[in-house]
Length: 575
Image (cartoon, rainbow, N blue to C red; front, top):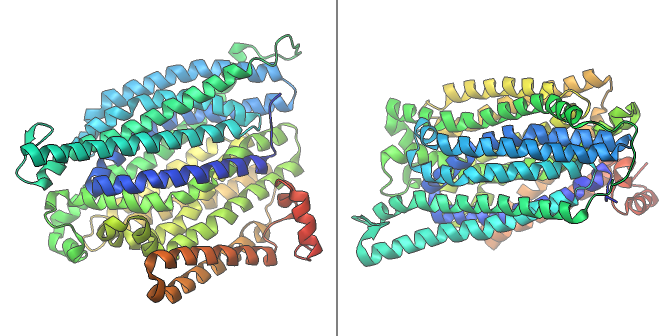
């Protein structure tokens, strides 16, 4: 018998796992950035930015389709049809994974030349097998998520993060360490003569980035192996069971493709919007350099590394953006992604049973819980942008100061990014998987236009990259919320969903900033940031209770939620 949880319990399981993943991700990304620097991280980011679109197209649509179908079959008692869905999906994922793997490997040379980062080719080739392993894993994850059992997915995520940390950092460090030792002894790096350490490092960085990428590939293989072995060990629980409406393999396949097609198109649109940065940022920065290089250089003064070739300046600024700013602000949507993953099967089951009230409560709860987590995190990042970067990337202080103004704005944008994931899941759960595609295309067009016109302005350059993200996500969230209410005929209570969490989060940000400024002169940056974050979290929790940001239905879905609810009611914190 499978272990299932309600949507909020499942989300909490995934959130705990994601918190562990993000800690290990920081332990991976921070030392990796210190090892490779901004230029080396641009090679790593180039490989990752090609992998994600292919992965998203190959995985996302079928993963959502598996989760939705399994949830519907389970809700209506069709257990054998649910298991048949997994078997059909694994065959499809094997095909799409192999196709994606060959596509990434074959297109590596063309891609890196197209984005004007040819030294990233080795890293791109190293990530190709990860597409296959990720596709196969997605089939098993979708099956368990559809049955509202988030433990296998959570365990696989933690395992993958652990392997990526151990293998990726070790490989990158070994390549750079051994290469510089070779230069010290022989004056060569990877067999090529070098005039100075800077030249040796420039030769080693592409290989070091590829070593880090091999850690990503190894992690996906480990996660796939775990899920497959777990499923095989569980055996078949439907053997000998009779079902009146057992779906044929053809019916299951058609249902999967019907649901997956619009979701895959949406994933492609989302991936293309992420590629917009890769395709436009360095190219448009190069044009800005050609317009007025002195104006661009005057913005950063002594923050640029000594000896940095002018030709590498776009890669350097792009590496600051992807390696530092995005690494921090992406924590927000990553930590709230669990709500979207968990609410999709729950919403699909309620909608399949025509339970409109249950659907409305889950919509409100999912959006509210997303904002409860995203708002304090995003506002906190915004008010403590530079101190956080200096804490996390202490060995890259110049890069942190270059990109801190961008992170100040991206912290707020990350709240909208977090909300879009939950919105997409709700739309998919009520049978409108086509709407996220249209929203992503519109958002991508806005982002492309803003990047194209802002970034070449020498006095703006990389500092304007946040505006494209802001315009894109603002359009998606506003139109997405309107479309969700229109399609379901249900209305959301804005006060409980948005206003109360926002008021508490603003208090959190004000508290954190005040404590940081008061403590900085006495405790220094590191301890002041930690103290500010802790005090902001405490103040936020107090305000949240006082303002009634959590509803009874939210509390009752938590582990030991009944006891928590009664305790708050006893203290008159719940009306």
